Image 1: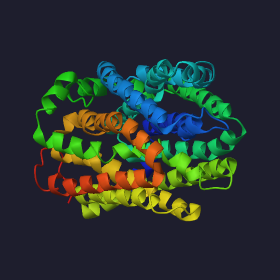
Image 2: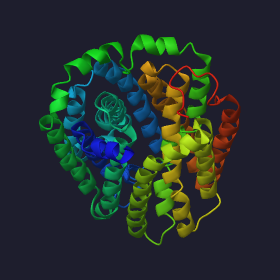
Image 3: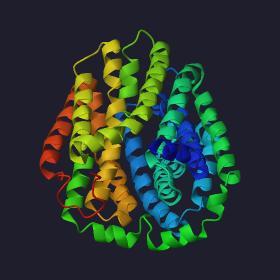
Image 4: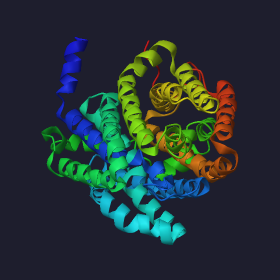
Length: 425
């Protein structure tokens, strides 16, 4: 019976469309984003910026993303399951290459702050804030049309993995090819959203009416009300000093650190692209397996396990310089991301009203991480410039360790403060 149900889900037109959209969006993003930090810092085929300058760019990106997350949430609230906002994001994705080549790069070199802000607005509108809208909308589709959100999201990781594999070879030849790739895949994404409308979605007037009374899209009044809850502030603090380092460490620092371990930049960049792709492939697989683990050991333990792996992974990078061993450490990323992301989402639906699950996900996870990045990106970039990667990674690992200890005491057990959907027995 379960097998038949799974087969029906795989043939679900809405699942197929949502999965394809996820795959194309993350592929368009990953083909340039996976090498964004290297492009900013590389002297040979990038802009040659310092660590503090890169930290400033990431901080400004986070500020712009914060503002657009609220705006996007309000717009999508009125659109319900309509894809108009996603189509707008896809149009911007098609402009990735001309923006980077003719606007962003020249501005960063001639008028750095102006370029950083212009870039932050575009990147947030097209990708950094758009990903939250895509995930929230897809999760909503999964509830209305009966498919597993995690399976659709795994296709996003698969798309990112394919692009990351290709990105390493393109970057060595010419970084502009990465941005052109982003635009070409963006065109495919736009065509997908414009012309693939499953029949059941077109006929979903009843589903839309239900969403009007049971909608999980962020609303300003919901956000204000939720901010009065002490338990939410505790988890926000936890996310700010743990998951924040997914971007600060993995996007702002690790790529250049890793490629510097090789005999030449070209070898390091190609190897990084291949390794990153393998890691994301495994991550996609784990997105399907972690729910089984979470059902066995519980939400709280899964979240703490993800935090422990994060601390271990970053800490080991502060002590090890052998590229082969570091490659093995990097693979821990494929365990950490599914453990943390899936458990934090389930934590919100377990302990809070499920009607506000997307709102909670936006405030307690995405926005909390963005605020953490605004606070920490520039100081850690300066620290890297002055003390090097090794000491910076050790300090980050120590922060995550202390946050994990804090989380051990404040993260609610699965059988207490259950105000949402209880765990299945």
